[in-house]
Image 1: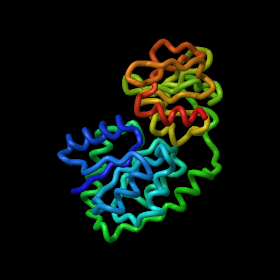
Image 2: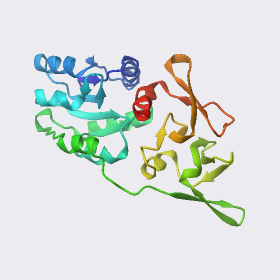
Image 3: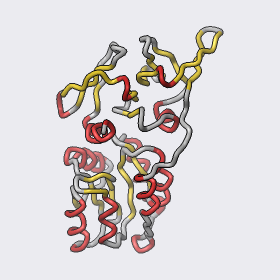
Length: 251
């Protein structure tokens, strides 16, 4: 199987390549920009499978396919929010949210193998995705959560929540008054329920409200440390794989 990675962050590309090698898969080539990818595809046999980042340093990766008729199956590697994921499903084998989880990667690869998509049968249309990325669908997001405290139910307005975090297999909402409340939801479910303009998944453990960020500090290994207004008693670190998308989210 021939595999290409298109990813502008070389550290992320190397990490994905190492993860694929652990699955006994070799990467033919890593490409890092729209321009480089167009040139490569015009002069080389197309691979069986592409791992495709959406936002590259010189534009959206979809611009590649305006210049080249692609013949490969695609697995998106993306930090974009759920409003476009349905379109991704229609045009790809699967999608992986960054930072990529090794178990999710393995499932996506197995899905590709089971489908056994011949390159000649791949038909891609990115127009719907482009429209969704530029004009996300208006929708209603969750405005409050309910948690049980003893024999009582407490309603927590989303505006009062500074972050969500996972700990000991539980998911907690941490509020402005410094209290944490156990929820029934997982962080993955919360990503479907909360506005991507307000909340961002900075790593596998934390989901942060933009209004709760008091300070942003450079941290080791190209990461960022966040200081929240609620003074949460633990480090809040933006994963290296999410730093670029975090900065874009901040605007």
